[in-house]
Length: 405
Image: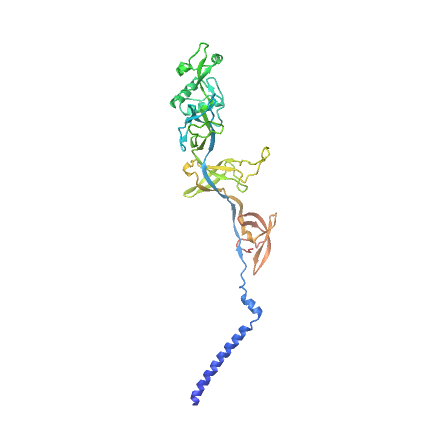
């Protein structure tokens, strides 16, 4: 082999040997890595501290709670049996569930006599006739005025009121009830004349007369009318102390359950939000306290048991526009009027502030150059994870970085 051929071959061999030597050296280095180096290689990279910047603003509290639309006033009105009868039976039930009852509406018929709806805060407690006076007469007259049978209410049951009652009965297809009146009462009380019908004339030699009157059982007192019928006794039902008519007021309202975290009073302003409708301003019209409940197995009076609810609040539109009954059953949200807890204060995340228990004092770590240092702060208010605070340290200002956690 010539010298020219051997020289390139020797160069190639030297190069290959160098590569092999380097590779071997690298493999040996891998096999002999120190434990500290291996741990360092396996450890995650150091993270920068989590910080947040202080801001300036108002800390505002506003509670939003779920609510529902219900009928404005649901009530169960008792039905009394016919006066002087040993057994009272529903003989007619003209109204269907869902029908609207107004003043003067015949609700049912008991023992062949009509029972009318009248708006009143109390049930009628006696039979009435000419010569009577009192709050029950005033309520009866107010209904007759509303129906157009009487021109005014003065609380005195006179001949005009008796005529108005007769017209109420006749327009419903009935004759006004009558009963025998003693001569003693006749001599001191003005009596209806023959114009009220033949039943008002003397019917025996002793001078007793059949006088028109209004049985207390002729009326069902309803707090709010008009109202929607929800249940009514069926024909043939025997009247008992459990017989009643269930009604809902024709107007709807928003009802929200109160709790320890939500307290409302009449007149409070709220905002009502409902899917598919614009939010509207509402006002609390009434608050009903939760009924206490309890149990006793020894016949004693049950002890009151605290309720999980503090009652309910009834909310209406602030502008007076009624809520449609078609909205009953819809879910809504009620937001209380925002309350400013702190105005123009420094605001920080709660996770950045160490709050002393039972105190308005606290502290936090604020960036000072490349390090963090502890500063004392005074807590103004805390709401939903945000702290309103102040400090005498001039470094505690808007834009300053504070350490979280």
